[in-house]
Length: 543
Image 1 (tube, rainbow, N blue to C red):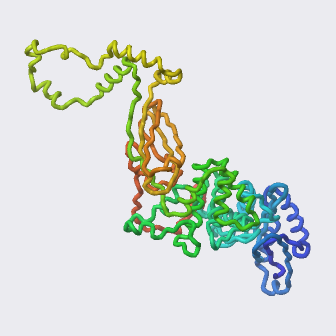
Image 2: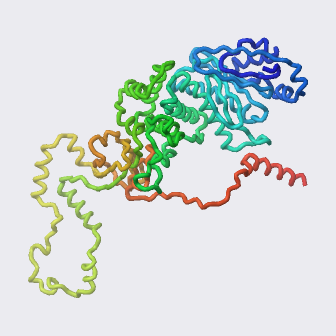
Image 3: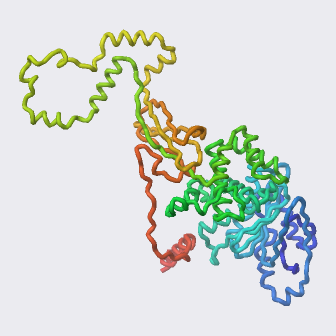
């Protein structure tokens, strides 16, 4: 390469003494043990290389950069006289990884502040969830906008404005693409699946671990893919199409990549979301993480197929997940569970005195008969009021009153109860019979949030096996408090496509109607607006 170029490549630099200055070699040595990025080639050095005349550049001659790599399936390199270069150490297992970034001045301040730290965070987090990163280096190379991966090196977009400000979208877009492309070292560079045949085993698994990594970068990280609610619009299809065309542009995840209509949603978004739901809602984090790491350890540097992934997840967890793979990966079904009906029942206390109180309370809540209420004023006197001889025993009889015979029978019945059954007699229990219907076809656990009359809440989680024999099931719940309302999928964790049938009493979920308006896409970003505001404030103060 031209002698003033800086070269990054798959592998480890073998001849740094021939291509770097003594000062640069000293900085590189510091970077190998540094806990934060150290500049190996500074901005000042990069600027000097950039402004040399054509004659100066020709007179410099060339330098040969020698790199060595093992256990790689591809090679890439980048070369530029504009490159700044920084690096830091990231311990992994018993070894160390030199994490580095190469970028021009146009990448700052974003790249100098974030890129190498994101590389190190990605290597660390992926190693925790999958298998240890086995390569000695990991590199992020700046581009204007695209992202692409190769072993030990990747190319990532994310460029601030010319004035050094940037939007929140640019910042998180850059962090996300670096995380994703560095993550490809694991899928498919180490866990070496066939991405042409099964794109989701590469992109989907990588996007899933990217989601986990992003959420450990910032608690409020706006991950694009992974949240169940974000896949709903894709999975339910086109609501404006005819019934037979609603899902005409959707294929199962297991479709060959060359036959996909919506590549991003099918190969990235849906498998990522499916695994997130499997982790959070179906298996639980501890069991899922153990099974997923077992898959990665078992199949690193081998060539797993989908069946190997499915079998390993079940083998390592001891959980039968056939129903999950079938629904999420082999069909275009969506999640739509309906809370179809609710019946409220009370326990029969069998205690005549308690039964009398309940009956009187129920009677007091009865809706008055309209005719009877009007007759109180319209009919001045009825026969039994005018002629006392028409009255008999039943005119003074109260059918709600507990009798002695009732009390004797109750005491006799109590003698046949077990101690734990006797204890239940003293509790005021409420029974709720709920009917669920699986409208969308995709089997999922049933998550219910109960809100009680006293304002407290409780969550019940019913495994997906509730659908084992039917898509229309009824289940009775025994509660110790009166229920005010019930909500299905309260945390939006199952990608339910219709929330309007998820509540009792029924509750309609509003959809947003966006009034069309012309948008000015090149508006100042918030950082620019804040800077302008401060500058204007300073000018006013000076005046």
